[in-house]
Length: 358
Image (cartoon, rainbow, N blue to C red):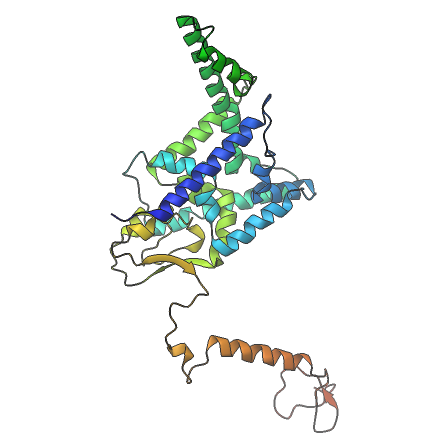
């Protein structure tokens, strides 16, 4: 059995970032004091940062972090969705509970995943007129609301009640459990829990997103997420891409792709790939890999390097040398038969008249 090292690394990354996400949110509540600022969660979110800046007509302090995420996406691809996003990780974990899922056909999948671009456009239009609705659809905000308004209160109350019932039921007022309870009470169990009337709406919205992943893998991510639309757009020309050799046309990778990124002809939509690395190990003959687009497959002579064909390197040398020559030519580079100058850089038919007459 092949060791799925890259998949394990990706799952480890999801776990680490999800735990860090929980820690940051939990540490923002009294009396905890975290070592990370909670604003970092949204400073790395281009959807929130860019559209908030647009709607408020200001440049937010964390703008540079969102720019960095865009740059990394252009280089690596849509890695954030598969390796970092807490909502994406939660969808993967819940979705793994059910093996059989609906697999949309390629044509249908291509159409429905365009919806997220429409949502992104709608959110951008609202931001342009000064109304911010990105907070409704952003995956980090959705996850943060669920954790803050649902998960933290439920876990805190249930844990506190369990300690109280155990201590009272067995009379453990001077033992290790009581000391442990007092220690927790002065830290994360000391959080003041408040009830908000819209908490149930937040919970139902989050629950619908998660349950949808049981029917279709990452349905929210592939169809509705506007942050995913930004990353998908930026990742279309990423330097890292999926490559296959000696394909058997078995279609296993296509049927198992959690984003439906692999097409009927077994090529793939680079912007939809979240670099989950599953297809590397799903391939029966192990001919699938991810590599840099500018790296040569081998050093053996190819048709491109043959003397009868202009290679890419020679073409670039010729192009830049031509540009350098053109850049130092005089504006009035040549003259007509009558001696008057003719503008250089403008196409003229043979025997053209003088400039003014022409």
